[in-house]
Amino acid sequence: MKEPGRGAIGRATAVAEGVAAAVRRRQRDREPRVLLYGRPGDPRVLAPGAKGHDAILDLAERMIAALDDAGDAGRGNARGGSARGGNARGGKAGRAR
Image (cartoon, rainbow, N blue to C red; front, top):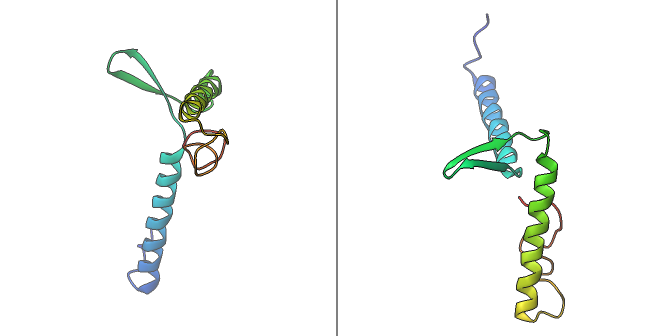
């Protein structure tokens, strides 16, 4: 088995691998997760693609949108959105991040 290069190319490769790993971690951390609580304080993550995952995410998004709408109505905002245009998640509808 060949050892990784210790020169400039080896260092550049190590930096590139570290950056790629950081990008993957950030993307994974931004994906919406579904936590299920069987008992108080005992959560488990429902894996993406598992049965019911998309339905639960959709329900959660609708609940958040309903709260946003109720908050906007309470403030008397004529546009129906926040002052930034849209909702609290940067003005884009869709999955919470």
